[in-house]
Image (tube, rainbow, N blue to C red; front, side, top):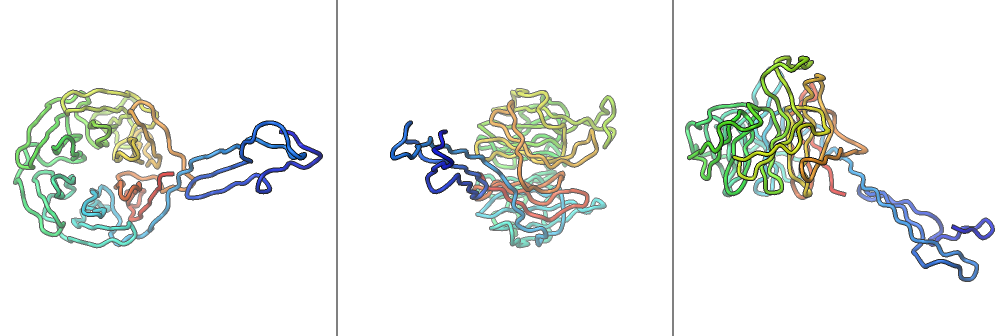
Length: 338
């Protein structure tokens, strides 16, 4: 750029820096080509846009009690939060919902389904699946659909909806599916990822995804947290629940368990979890389009590291609720897409 004397003439007076809803924008002069008119130098138009995500604390003390391992679904224009763990292995068997993340309403203070049931929305109903199967259209009245599931009562699994079926996986080596909640078919007895649990599961880009998690076997050397566990940072996907492909053996994020995955803004995301190898909670957030190339989301503000948070995609926003930072929490965070 050329200066005449000591004066640099810039449209609107000077370089501008503006900030709006997570975007940083710097702008200089519209482009008018080389040269000058009347002694004024015309400069090129420079715009630099830096997308900056920030988590916003909606409430640090929601109406529901502090908890982790709560199941969440979006149904009937609300976020729903089911059950939860409290210190000392105390199970809270309630059900809450919210239209805005700030005000929460207790819909049921004694849910009839198995504690820590996996939750999903399927065929315009909410479903709770574990050792038995239940469904509801309002969260208050629940219908028992099946007395006992063929896979039994397991912990740290995933209930997903894909291709007009409910899928149960991630709490063992097998994969099950159902079109009605009554009849369950074991589509795969031994998945290539092994006897995995406490993994993250999601449906993204027309596929079922399973990420990380643990197997009950000692690592070499033993991990610093739970000595009998080996944790992973691999990424698997399947279009039909039968044929699985490992797209990444070692993703750039630390091996972890007790963390959620979800599909948002055309990307697959993971949030937090527990790093058993180093015996510490995690607060990082990663995303990918294909399961191979991952990026870490850097933010100006964020929540404390935690495992077993409950995450939602609700009203085009990304929500993180509760979890365990030692102690357990009942906070609500939201992040807008820049």
